[in-house]
Length: 144
Image (tube, rainbow, N blue to C red; front, top):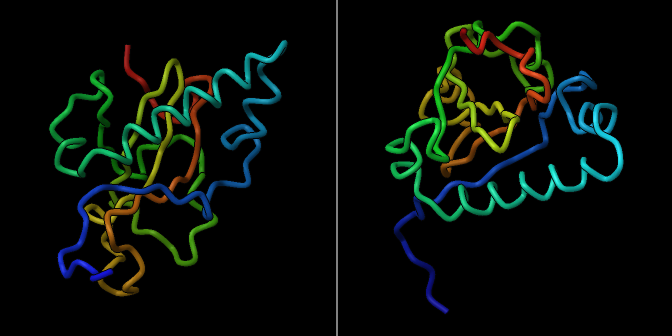
């Protein structure tokens, strides 16, 4: 089978650097939900990850935050430090994507908004590096 020389522009998600803060990782969902609701919420996340991963980065960027796309914010806008597991310090002006799934959010750093990427050669191939989940609207200011 011949490999394509053209890179795919579909996105993928990496959870290797997810925060250790239990309020903003998978543990946070387990502590807040009862009666199997957490399983349904995780299933909903997986459905969205599958949908997002089959879309191109441009398609996701063209969708509104309320239309299964995402919004972009600087990591210094987050109210809690959740980027501590990245293998190098991120500039406070680094962009993060915030995806909606149900009543929750997934914050991830992505290559096109990453200032440190050129120095480290680390972020490539349209990967979103998940940093945190927002299970209770406390990770950042959601507005009025």
